[in-house]
Image 1 (tube, rainbow, N blue to C red):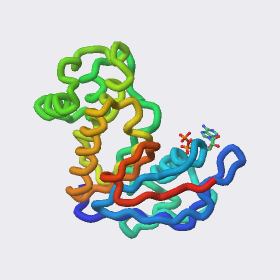
Image 2: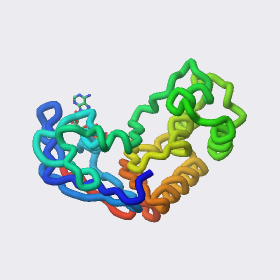
Image 3: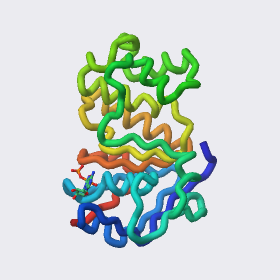
Length: 204
Ligand SMILES: Nc1ncnc2c1ncn2[C@@H]1O[C@H](COP(=O)(O)OP(=O)(O)OP(=O)(O)O)[C@@H](O)[C@H]1O
């Protein structure tokens, strides 16, 4: 993880399905920040995260990562970013442990076990994901956050389907990451007063 990093979004316009989203959005994030993207359904929160990670291109605007302009080539940012999308993106036929190894092939067994214990998934490590509940499946997708060394986390509705304990665990992990110098941008319809250091509102 970088000791200090920043992300600067300047005058960003996104067009999707012939709708203008974001409309000149500017904000910046730096090490230690947890920023929540707010907005109504369809406002463009998921699209914004996809633009930041480089899965979509903006119509206009600039994106800079730690001072480097990455608008046309997001590779520097991608090397240092972990994006977890709205859909959980886990492989249903693989077991919990196999799913985690799919994304983190170099993880050592002790570290994997510690992450699974933290997420209360240790008893399910050999269970195929298709036999888990929605909340447990979300925990499998989020396990990468316990293993990642990436600085910038882009999390689309990470609290969806989690129970109270799951929300607490994830909030703690996000706080630890920010305290260690990480940056987190997340979308959530939940009230996260104690977690987010700042909100960015997308207007219709
Ligand atoms: N795969 C897609 N192809 C084309 N247009 C899309 C696609 N996904 C979303 N859109 C359009 O982009 C706009 C913004 O969608 P987006 O998913 O970014 O909103 P959101 O704020 O994340 O919504 P929600 O709170 O419902 O998750 C919507 O008008 C939607 O119709």
